[in-house]
Image (cartoon, rainbow, N blue to C red; front, side):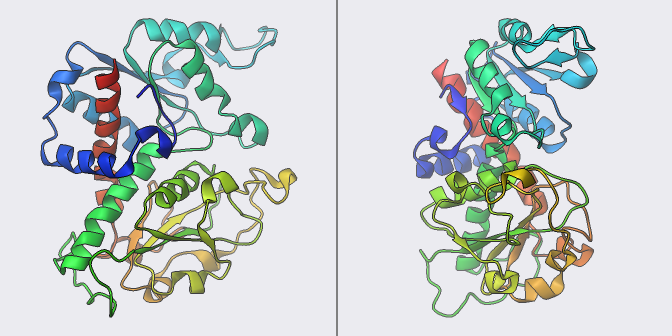
Amino acid sequence: MRTFINVQDIGPLDKAMAEAFEIKNDRYKYQHLGRNKTLMMIFFNNSLRTRLSTQKAAMNLGMNVIVLDVNAGAWKLETERGVIMDGDKSEHLLEAIPVMGCYCDIIGVRSFAGLTDREYDYAETVLQQFIKYSGRPVFAMETATVHPLQAFADLITIEEHWKKTLSGSPCLGGGPKAAPEQGRLEGSRPKVVLTWAPHCRALPQAVPNSFAQWMNAAPDVDLVITHPKGYELDPQFVGDARIEYDQKKAFEGADFIYAKNWSNPGVTNPADYGKITCEDRSWTVDTEHMSWTNDGKFMHCLPVRRNLIVTDDVIESPNSLVIPEAANREISCSVVLKRMLEAL
């Protein structure tokens, strides 16, 4: 595997999931693969879970790790071609990228959307330059449009807790669990709802895009996406998911609720791209919202704005999976790095 951006890059999803649980049972099983190999992690944006989980996964695999924070530990980089560099940017990405490639075997890139130019963002301009000019395998640590490591970890988390629901074993955290819905048998599909929630800042669509893409690729997930009108995600990610503009109807009978804000994707009105065009706080996930579900589990990628995206009582409840999700980021990244090391 030379690149990891979308779900298609991982190959057969059932094999990737089996590999994830194999690694979770023995995180150091493939430590020999990374011996004398170096991962370079390049951050154009802040990070907590991605930085820590990716570095931990690499160390589990025996790799050396170099972390570069472009905004704090390097020259300011120009990313556009044809620019007269007479401003505050001292180095062009087209020279910096091949230099970075000289010092490592695999590159991870984190670069968010600018949210001003939809065409530029959705072309994944920065990431594609790394793929083209680094000479190294490249994986996305969240980009302008996708966050595949998060979505992979989310799918692992859903698989784990769906099996616990079906088996009747306690949920993680030891909280009480309602009986499975009448008629629900082994092999039935969990209802997973991706819900928009309000936020005080304009955020990219990377997490919801990837979440929708990965849930669509999973054969045993019934995906519903709910959001205000005008916030439609790009069709390439929505796929065959059901769209429901009534949040209560979407939540009814849900097994998993994945809350996430995103700014206007500009699908229905390109002029609205990257803007906040809805501030309706009735979409905040609270106890009443969760009461509409089938004893649903709450999910969020973190960091989360409490009492804006979700209320304290929901995120702190026994049905909150935000910490197991974060823990599984180490596992999803381990699978990706393992596959890239095997292809070197």
